[in-house]
Amino acid sequence: MPDDIYYDEPVEQVAAVDEAAPNDGAASFWQRIIAVQRKLKAPKNSWNAFGKYAYRNCEDILEGLKPLLEKYDLLMTMSDEVIFLEGRFYIKATVTVYDVLSGQKHSVSAFAREPENRKGSDQSQVTGSCSSYARMYALSALWLIDDNKDPDEPQEQKAKEPPAQGPFVAQHASCGTSYQ
Image (cartoon, rainbow, N blue to C red; front, side, top):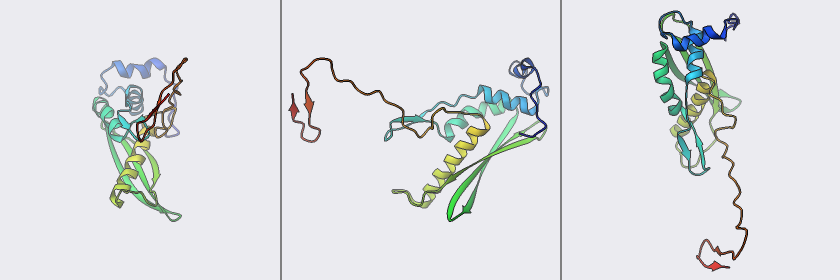
């Protein structure tokens, strides 16, 4: 944020943006960004069956953002730039939010590195997934979407405890033979 932004305003004034008509001109650009950050809900609607964890992707974030951007007279764009650095390709994703009323804007960028190779994907798929990943992190930074855990980290699963008493029966996975 620019150095000339201070938060000396009373909390009631910032909170009043939620109750007042959002586009009446009384709320500043930064107050409306704060209102969107506070109201945005971006649940983890996607599931990784291999890693057995829920995650959010770029589309999940955008679904929650669109009505809020409209309500608060904000416009958002996303762009990508391919950067070659120290022998590797990176995607630099930039998310910019514009104030429709004043023309002010604010941008946030995030980088993701393309893997050297990825089984089962052609080059355009590798670049596309890298772009989506960088965009998701730029969106998360701009709109303060915070996971206390990395979204790519598998969820902890409770260890299964054996029954307190026997008899115990196990079944061989490949042939199906049962053992007691």
